[in-house]
Amino acid sequence: MIKLSKTESKSREEVTEAVREAYKAVEAIWPEYQAMLDKVNGVIDAFNSAVADADNFRQSVADQMQEYYDNRSDAWQNGDKGTAYREWLEQWLYSVEQVDEVEAQEMPVINGLDELEQAASELEF
Image 1 (spheres, one colour):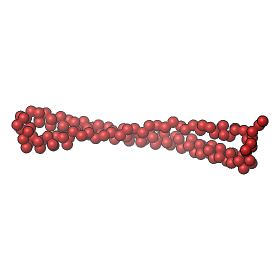
Image 2: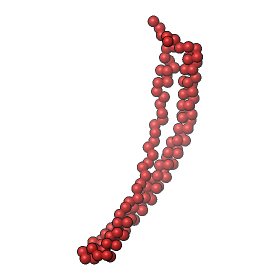
Image 3: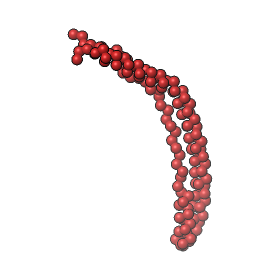
Image 4: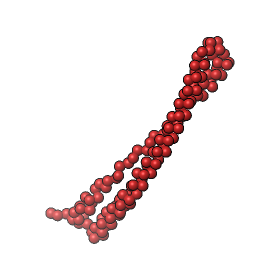
């Protein structure tokens, strides 16, 4: 092949135009995406704040329980009550996990479309 056919030339025009039109749709929706991302991250921040409050409460209770346990004799700690108390304390040692914020994406860039559009249609000797 040394030259694009008329059909291929027309197809090139059609596919490059389709990419440009699709990109216009991306550009049009991008501000909504950014606004929604801000809302999502605001909700995630509120969630993480609530999780931090819950975890602070949990840690406070666990610290008090640990202090109570530590102030008991070894005999008490190793007995049935101490064992039961330790099991109860361990239930309070697990943290609620926070959620990571959603990372913003950069506006996509079309790479290579101009080159496809401008590529020679035929081989020149």
